[in-house]
Amino acid sequence: MGKKNKFLSWLGFGKKDAEQQSQIQEQEAQLAKEQEAQAKLDQEQLEAEAQAKLEQERVEAEKQAAEQEAERQRLAAEAQAKLEQERVEAEKQAAEQAAEQEAERQRLEAEAQAKLEQERLAAEKQAAEQLGGAAG
Image (tube, rainbow, N blue to C red):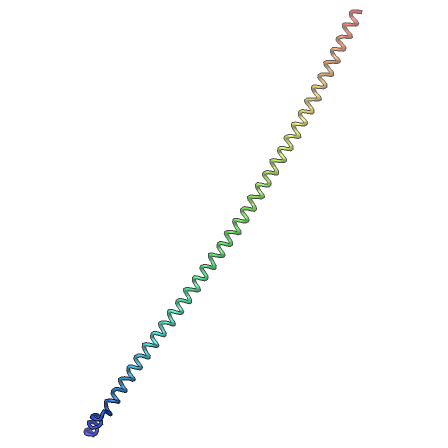
């Protein structure tokens, strides 16, 4: 049997089995490397997708925060405008009331002046009549 193996080996049969075994091992090693590389690519892709999702969520959160801030500023501006309008209206009413009070004061003063003038004329008339009555 040993001679047969040597003979087969000499013809190259034994070498082919060893080469085939070596090739199979190389193919298996290559396949393992490819599977490992594919697994690594799959992992990287999952990580990239997770990162993209996180980034999208961050952008969405920032967008929502910006919208909320814009709404808050709009409401604050509306409130400020309403306060300003109320202030202007109050000033207008105060000015109108002051003008009415000034007009009333002037009317009362004019009436008092007219009454004083009437009293003065009446007093002069009475004084004139007394002088005329005393002289006659």
